[in-house]
Image 1 (spheres, rainbow, N blue to C red):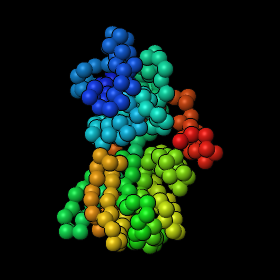
Image 2 (image 1 turned 90 degrees about the vertical axis):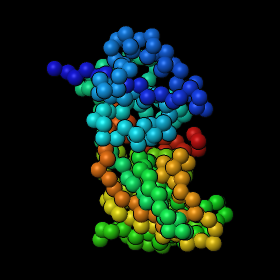
Image 3 (image 1 turned 90 degrees about the horizontal axis):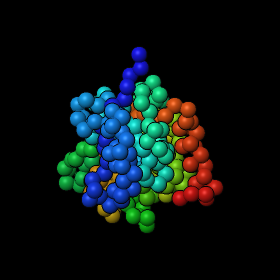
Image 4 (image 1 turned 180 degrees about the vertical axis):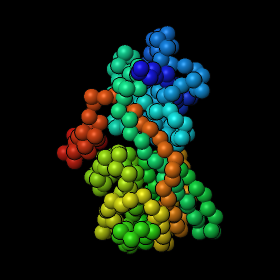
Length: 271
């Protein structure tokens, strides 16, 4: 017997900038999905989340719902939406779990240590980045705990450690300085932004330490500006067992779409 999907909606607060982009999904919920029994306002009765936003909202949802046992089905209300499903009609939202292609990914955790020795820790779904302004010149000593990791020191503006899902954004926004890793590879990517030489490599998830040296202040971020650590000297990045399951409609070649987006950027067709 097929397992029916019951979604709990996760939409941006109406006070958030750009929340009106999700209004069409709000209408679907009110006019169609509640009556069809696909949506509930009782989170405990749901086996899936209906995440109506852009990629940033999906990243936030992943950090707040991990280990819930519920899948995350995204409806793109943003710009590119490379973690989302492109849905034009409420009847395209899957009714049964067997209609989904599921990909499970694990979060990483960053420990950010500042010049005073104080530490703050954040979970990250996509990536952890540290660096300065575009004119800054910083030395990054990058070391891993496993024997296959290529320890190195690079100099420049910034470095990042990215999960497979985070590499799409770096390939788009950093103009190809990252590979686009398949979501199910269970690997990380170490890359640089305006660094020489690029510290590019794929590695197994492991404890990675980045020591930063600069005359200027260095800040760090876990999944963007929402989680910021200021004036850091060192970052320790570790894998976790916290898991999130992303859901995509079957029949849609999601990995091909990610590659196409990255290739379009290289050709200057999008931004």
